Image (cartoon, rainbow, N blue to C red; front, top):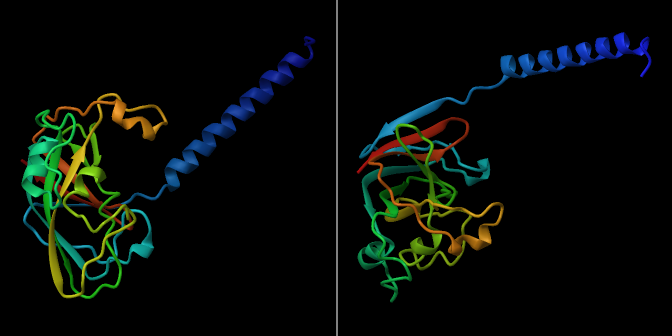
Length: 210
């Protein structure tokens, strides 16, 4: 590069850097903040159309109450809540590997459904631990689900109580969810959690404690 081109190159670099800085400022200045609502346990929470993944869930008319939270092993869950013949799984005796929420759902006129599967739990106070739904374990309770992980609906004018287990892996595989069984389940030491039940148009959380 000739000496004459060096000042021009430096000037161009300064302009590009300045434009990037302006772009970052504009994005931060115009970003839309999602309102956050927090609720206690044992309070009926009306979803009023709030959803986790897609507005087509149509949760108008749905409400829920988180009645209880427990920490247990996989086999304890099966022995208490399984509705099929499975009462134990390999490695299921390891204690304190599942957060289990007792949740009562109510449908007061919706033709839609609630996305239970995509909900998750975060530990408090740091919120750096994320527990996701253990669908394989939950299916032993909800035997009619049959791998339908999109959303769950209940009849209009009825309530339904279920027990949803959540877990976290200690060594989750990188970009390879099909190798989960080679990982181990983390021991849960936290006693307080946030249960995320909606992300849009507002984020809705239930403050859960064991």
